[in-house]
Image (cartoon, rainbow, N blue to C red):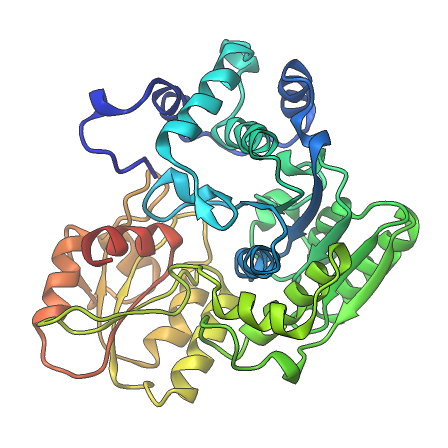
Length: 407
C-alpha cells in the first residue's frame, strides 16, 4: 500500500525512495538490516524492547501494550505492519502516528547509507531501520515491535528484546515458514532470548506447536510462560471479539514485565487502545454500517464467524470479500459465506490480489457476484436494503481500501 498523499510529486523524498523499493518478495535474513543499523550507530541499542510474533493477534497485542505503557507515562514507541491507509500508521511515538515529514527524514537517512542494487533493503527492512532511528530521536524508553513474518529471520529480530511474545501458532505463510505447524512454531520461537521472559498465549495453539515453543525456549534459555485469558480484563478494551481477551491478557503481562503498573493505569490504557480494521464498526449518516475486519487466514475467519454468531449477525450481514492469491482463500471464505445474506467478490488494491472472477472460480462458485473495483462492490451492497452491517473481510489490504473510501 502507498502513502495517501495525493499526487506523487508531493511525496517527500524519503517516502518517495521507500515507494521506489516497490513490493518485493520476502527476503529472510538479518544481514542487510544489521548493516544499515551499524551505519547509523545502532539506534536499536538506545531503548528496551518488547518483540511480538504470532499468527494472529500480534498487532492487537502490540497496540494494547503501547496504549498501556503510554497511559502509565512510559515513553513508548510502536512499530507495526502492514498499514491500512497511510504508511505513517506503522510508527507511533507515545501512541500518536509519526508525521510524514519525520518519517521521510528518517528514511532519507536510511537511503543515504543503503547500497543500491541487489543489496538494497526491502521496503520492510527500510521501514524497520527508520522506525528504530525515530525511536532513538524521540528518546523512547520501550519500543513495542511487531514481527513482520515468522521471527527467526525477520528484520525485527535484530533486537535483543527484554520480553518476547508469541500470541499463537496457526496456519499462515506455510510456504515460507512451514510446511508444518511445528516448523512455524520453531521460526516464531526464534525471537526468544536467553535469561529473558517469553510469553505465549494459552489459547489458539495446538499441542504439537506448543511443545515446540517450550523446547525452543529451553534451548534458548528463555523463561516461557503461557498466559491464559484473564477475566479481570474483560470489557476494558474497545477491540471487539471474544478472542481479544487473550490478546489483552498477553499485553498486560508484557507491559508489567517492563514497568511497574497498577490496575488503574492498565485499565486506562486498555480503554485508550486504537487498532483499526479489526472488527471495526463504521457508521456514516445515510449509509449502511460497515463491519471491517482484517481476517485473512482460516483461524482469523473462524474468530470472525464466532463473533457474528455471538452478536446475532449470522445470516443478516452482506459480505464484501477479496484477498491475496497466495492465501487459503477457500478456507477463509467458507465460514463467512455461511453467515452472509449476499456476497460480492472484489480484488483489493495489491499486485498480489486474486482477481474477482478468478476468485469465484477458485472458490468453486462461478455464480457469485463480482465487481470491477472495491468502490463498485461496496456501492452495490450499500444500495441494498438492510439494517445489518456490510461485512468487509478477506485481507488487510481490502480493509485499507474500504477505510480509504468510508473511514
